[in-house]
Image (cartoon, rainbow, N blue to C red; front, side):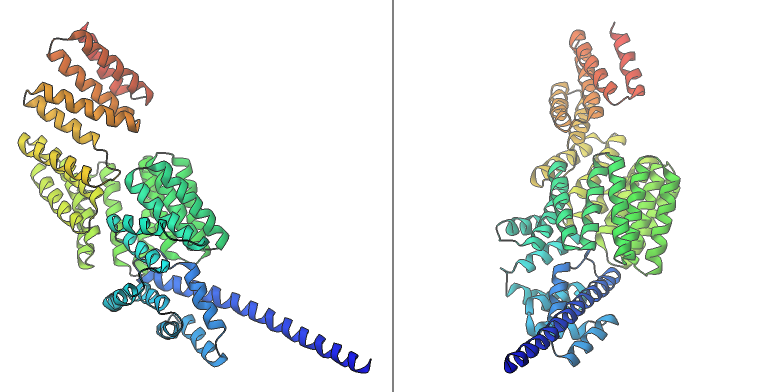
Length: 494
């Protein structure tokens, strides 16, 4: 009995010590995880081009450090807390070469790009490689590459963290393709999984994406809720860059609702943050958006001024994508000013740069500005040539570009060329596209154009039928001005 008591006491002490050790390690793990997530995130906000480094990968690194020797552990903790990551990368390399390479890719892409590529391609079947390659492609708007990566990920076995990231990247592709239902479904599922993992930055990014989707669908109240949710999450994760980006996104939403003063104020706040952090590209993006805001307000001189300033900043930072968008805004501004020659020059420059970065959706937008400008100059063969290039590119690359507008413009060109049969086919083709997308304004315009062709052919009854159809569509979106125009044309037929 005496020995039994001693054994029991010894086991009790051992149990207490083991429990204390486990509690200590659990608290230590929580501390290390929180610090690593925050510090890597803060560093990435200022220097990395990707939206975030996946939280589950950071947790893996933190857990490795927690279980190393005390002296080494403290050295690594102090260096990470100070925002220095070389020691962490070297330590991780001995444990997990792929994870170490991914950290390099995120933290120091400009210095280690060739080495990173070599290391990553040694293990092409690693899911983490595809995740990071996908985030890199997303950041560069390289949707061709992103599509390939998403397709490869869909064939792999994914755990909860990688599935969330897969859904997020899939939603990006769906948005680019114009499939809003699939985009919103994937983004909502991704946000839910991120929430369960307490991956705040990823959850915020998913809400930002949802805001973009609902803004595109003109569901303004829901879009604003998404941006506000993202803003709170970014603030909770100490992401000043993310918070500023969410303000800029909300500003674009308000601009679309013609709440211009509120939008301008949010743009100012966002730009001040990026300027303070010395993030030239981010600041230049806000200047581009300010140019667009002025374009929407009809302040064309201000729009040109801001777009030129943004263009210079993007050029100094060697950001081709941002420079191309500035060119496109300049083209739009000069188109509105009826300076069609300069509009054509800037639209052509934008197309060249968009093609270089393989952003075909933006290329199509810029090409349409060029086609419109040639049309305004009465250079009909040149305008028709650009329209055919747009249709060809649209068939080659699936995007959310509204190709119906191009068929309508080409139809108007053939009306001017007195080729009414071809114009009729083009307007009907446009009508099919508009009806598929439920764009009532476009449907009404196509019916009016078809009515003009029938009126010219002397088919008054069919012309009247088309005008009445156009009137029904115009009433659906409460366009009183369009209704007045159509009623006036109906009176002339009477």
